Amino acid sequence: MNYEKSTETDVAYYILSKKGEPIYYKDLVTEVIKKKAKPVQSLSRAISEVYTQINMDSRFHHMGKSMWGLTEWNPPETKRSGSSSGGTTAASKSTRRREKLFESIQE
Image (cartoon, rainbow, N blue to C red; front, side, top):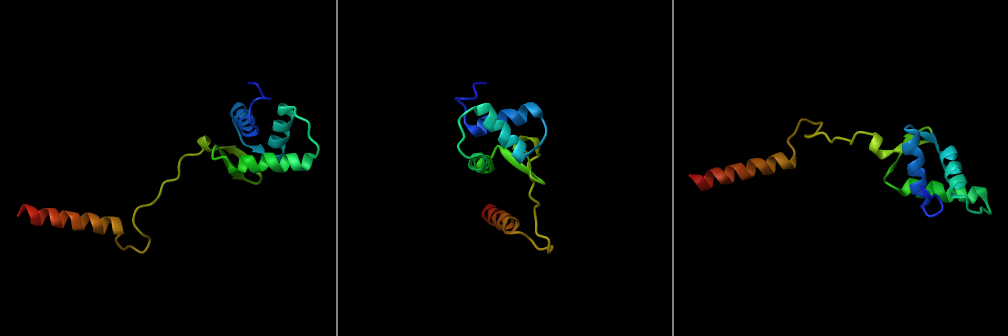
């Protein structure tokens, strides 16, 4: 991989995919800065900029306790159908309404 021509987030993605496990954010950002090998006037500013870019990129997932991993490592969240109060949802009411309308048309 040509690190100098790649974006910081692409380098971070490459680092995480090679490692295969979450990395502490400061270690990840420091590694990105090293691999990019571009002059840094302020290390704290560079860390902040790279961290912000990673935070905004949907390929990355905050794992908790300042650890970052890849979104693809986590199964997609599933939404529950129905409501917790035991009532019917708007979607199921709409479906029933369509079924009744269809039945009345067929009669």
